[in-house]
Length: 240
Image (cartoon, rainbow, N blue to C red; front, side, top):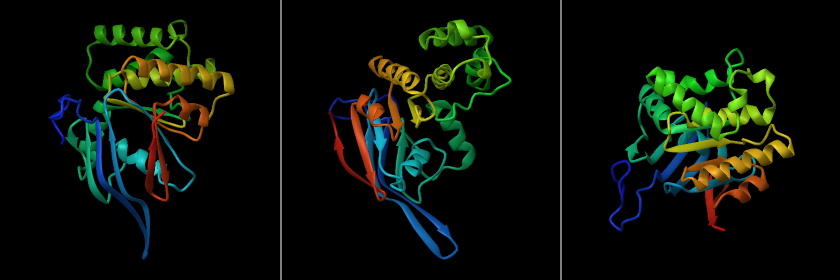
């Protein structure tokens, strides 16, 4: 069923940007084995907005790490944007991660000594993008997330909601196949969290593929599809 990146499956639908089959993850401590994921089958199509929810210990963080190429499964197949990633080495995973995934974390992960502009520019520098194109891209992204007037501020000089919007702009810098967000409203007050949720909805409406791991029911309700985990397995999808 998998095709080259950007292709279509025989029925004419776009190929999955994420395609998982039989994903298992076992952690071992001495003679003790803990099965965090017990056979995950998951497809996400381009342009979907998916929330991954579940109680503590359900496997959400493990699944997020595998989706984000931060960890590898013990067994199973995983294709990201048409590329087989299960079983690849650390350097190759890092390359795929940098090209295909934009990360948004609960703690923002902005570099405090850099300005908002410089934080957003950083992935483009690492990606070898020429200076003129970097400037055009960064200014466009800051305008998109409502931070054009905060470009020269450092993270300590802006609010938490503004810091998260800067992190979202940075996640979009390399135009990744998916944006993967881990509890993106967890450190924000209600008003700032609502602003970030509005931005996620706007990105989805523009066709961006969004995957959000969250405990926040308000954010999960914004998604068009909810994937629920329990004891390392997916329970039936809820598609509003």
